[in-house]
Every structure is written in C-alpha cells, then in structure tokens.
Amino acid sequence: MEQAFGNFVNGEWVDAESGDTFEVVNPADTADVVARFQRSTAADAEDAIEAAVAAQHEWANRPGPERGAILNRASQELASRKEEATEMLVREEGKARSEAAGEVQRAIDIFAYYAQKSLDLGGVVKSPSGRNKELSTKREPLGTVSIITPWNYPIAIPAWKLAPALAAGNTVVAKPASEAPNSTRILVECLAEAGLPDGVVNFVTGPGSELGAPLTTHAEIDAVSFTGSTSVGTSVAQAASEGLKRVQCEMGGKNPTVVMPSADIDEAVEILGVGAFGTTGQSCTAASRAIVHEDVYDEFVDAMVEYAEDIVVGPGLDDPDVGPHVSQGELDSTLEYIDIGVDEGATLETGGERLADGEYDDGYYVRPAVFSDVDNDMRIAQEEIFGPVLSVIEASDFEDVLELANDVEFGLSASIVTQDLTEANEFLDRIEAGVAKVNEKTTGLELHVPFGGYKQSSTNTYREQGDAGLDFFTATKTIYRNY
Ligand code: NAD
Image 1 (tube, rainbow, N blue to C red):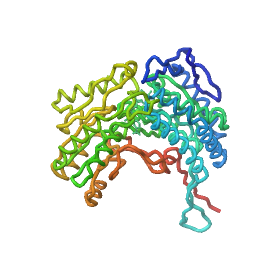
Image 2: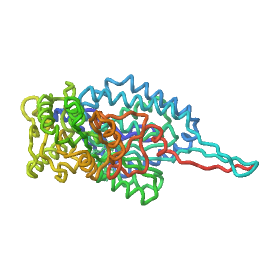
Image 3: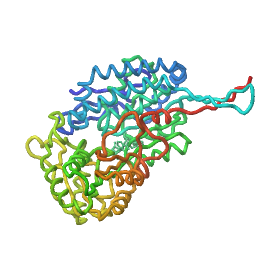
Image 4: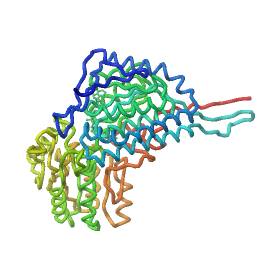
C-alpha cells in the first residue's frame, strides 16, 4: 500500500476534513502509485490560513539573521536528502534524472541564497528638507501569503517563492499542483526539521478549483504568488485584485529561437534541440518556434530532423534525453496539437507519434516532433503546446525575423543564434520578452537575477528570483522622524 501524506497545518501533518485522498502516479509507469495526498476542501485551506495568520507576528519579529539561519539549515537538510528528492521528483513528474538532480540542487541553492539575503533586508536613509529630521524607508513583510505552483518544476518553483517569502518574514500557505506534490512536501519537511516555528509554513493539497477561492480571496491573505497557465493565472489575478491583494502571476510562453545565416548550424541545432525537447518540452521557457533565415533554412531543417531522430526517449530514472509527459491530459493535448499542425498544412518532418510498445506501454510517451513550413498565424505557432514539438518558420530577412518573433501574445523567453554583434544587440533591444539571450537556449535561468515575462506571460507586476524576489514579498514604509 502506497504511503499517504497529510496537509501540514500549524506544525502538524493532518488529514483533510473530507477524509478523501487522491493518487499521484508515475508518468513513466502508471501502475506505480507514488503516494496519496489529501483531497482538501476550502475548510482545510481556511484552517491553514488561520494558522499562518496566528504565526505571522512572531515570525516577522524574529531578527533577519535568525530567519536566515533556519533557511540555511533547510538548505542543508535538503542537500542531505538530495538523492531521495531527485528520485521522487522523477517518479512523480517524469523528467530525466540529471534534469531532476539539477532542479533539486537549484532548490538547495535558492534556500542558501535567500538565507543570506535575510541579513540584508533594510531600507535607505535620505536627506530631509529641514533640520532635526530624519527621512528613511524600511522594508516590512506583507503578512500572510499564498503560493500556488505548477507541476513542471515542482521543487524549484515552490523554493523560489517560499524562500524569499520566509526570508522577508511572511507566513505562507503553499498549494502544489496535484500531479507532483511530493517535492513541495519534502521542502516543507526540510523547513520543519530546520526549526521553522509551527504555522509559519502550511501545506494544503487538492484541486485548484476548490482551494483557489480561499487562497486568493480570503480576507487575511495579503498577497498571492502564482505560477501556471495563462488561463488559470488570469482568473487568479482577477480574484486577488478584487480584494486589492498584491498579486504576481507568471504564466505560459511561446518562445522563439532565431537562427541567422552567420550561425554555426550544429550549435543552433543543439541549442534548439535542448531548448525544445529537454524536460519533454514541458518548460514555460521551452523553445517552441525556430525562426530561421531563408539562407540556412533547408540546412537547418535537415540537421534538426536528424537531431530529433537520434533522441532517446525513456523512463526518467534511466536518464534519457526525453522522459514522458506528466499526465494523460498533457499527452492528449500534445497529440491533438500534432493533428492540428497537420490539418493546418504544416509539414510533420518527424515524430509526433505516441510510443506505446514494450517499455513505453505504461507511460505517456511521444516521439519529439519537428514541423516545417509553419506559418506564424497557425495555431501550432501561436498557442503553448507544452510537449516536445518544434515549429520551424522561415524568415526572409532580419526585420521579418523580429516581426515573426514578436507576433505572439506571449513574451517569456527568446534567443538568437548569430555571430553578428549588431544583429545580436538589435535583437536584445527589440525582442518583446522578459528573458532575452544570445547564443543560448531559451530554457535555463540563473537564480540571482530577475525572472518573469512580458505580455500574456505575466501580470507584469513584480519579477521573481534574485533581489526582485524580495520586492514582491515586502512593503516599503516611509518614515519621517523629527527630534
Ligand atoms: P495550471 O494553471 O493548470 O495549474 C497551476 C496551479 O494552479 C496548480 O497548483 C493548480 O492546482 C492551481 N489551480 C488550478 N485551478 C485553479 C484555480 N481556479 N484557482 C487557483 N489555483 C488553481 O498549470 P500547470 O498545468 O500546473 O502548469 C503548466 C503551466 O505553467 C504552463 O502554462 C507553463 O507555461 C506555466 N509555467 C509558467 C512558468 C513561469 O515562470 N512563467 C513556470 C512554469 C510553468
């Protein structure tokens, strides 16, 4: 019998009031039930919010270095459980073992980074307009925040929200995605083991449709940090801003990598291959459109197809190039987009078929697909697919490249492959994306610089990660002191 995990409320692991649970299954082998979690209702979320509110004053009043010491211990605790966390992440989410190990290491590093940052929270002193006065600012925590996260980076994303929220003195209710809640559960265990006081972090699992309302509208929630799809994020932003809560939503992408004539084609293919098919294409920053100059278009398509056909697809625990989709729903969605692309008149050069024999029998596998002859107005060039599908679009010149790259409603990440410095700089200036790169894949982020999207990829309120991660979770008080 697989293990059942509770919600974590006020320092205790508890069952949901409903008594119901749900299964988390291994997407590489659906007969493998990884664990069971609580199917919570709004009442459970309310209990968690109350616990977080009760713990807030004491936590906010702890000196920053004390909060930082706890985050540091949590980082060390996770480091000591890295193997277990990696294996669990692969079993619940499906990605390749080395990608999962990198993600767990990222969470370890994020906690260490914000542990240090909690020492630096302060303010500025300015010159007042008179004598015997002092004019300054002070950063304060917001209070109690909710954190709603997706399944595709199930440990890194909760870490990059939890760590700055806690470093700044907030208390938290965290709701992970139901496909992959174990990774957040492990983070919460590490925080508890590190000595985090009861109620400072609370963890509630279950359907977003049920938990979303209390987590976004409860009167005692001061801010909501959400990462997920644009459709859910839009409703989260609307619900939270109705109550004038601070809200941050980071959402979908349709990220281009541009290939110019001066590019080394092998390098461009590698950049696109890893960017489009790594993590099974299930990254918000995955390259989904290759916009290729006509002078190198044919050469690029041939080399890209060869690359895709060499990809090893298999169970994440074997550390293949590409693992399974996370769920039946995500698999079906990718297969549907393959049909849509064919119906729209794009050429399916390779891949796109479900793999279902032998070792693939019980998993959600698709062979990585490359479409050529794609028009930018086709649905496969406009909508987020979230699977290993690359659309190759031909461009006539650099102006055309920029127009095509920007002609989508999303604006998360973008890159150019070129040896021409002017072209590279012009691209960086004119691309409408929150992350812009030269000669690098669209995926992959450094933890100490801001991350977030433009356009429909983000609510464009605050950035995450780096110093910007603390901005969201703090308010600035301006102080006029007369003496
Ligand atoms: P999703 O929007 O379906 O779910 C995200 C979270 O919201 C989950 O925890 C879910 O349970 C919860 N939720 C669902 N309905 C809700 C509601 N009505 N109210 C409140 N919460 C609700 O997204 P997903 O399928 O888990 O993740 C994939 C999506 O996330 C993709 O679109 C991807 O681009 C995006 N993403 C964005 C970033 C980024 O930083 N921009 C990073 C990773 C993933």
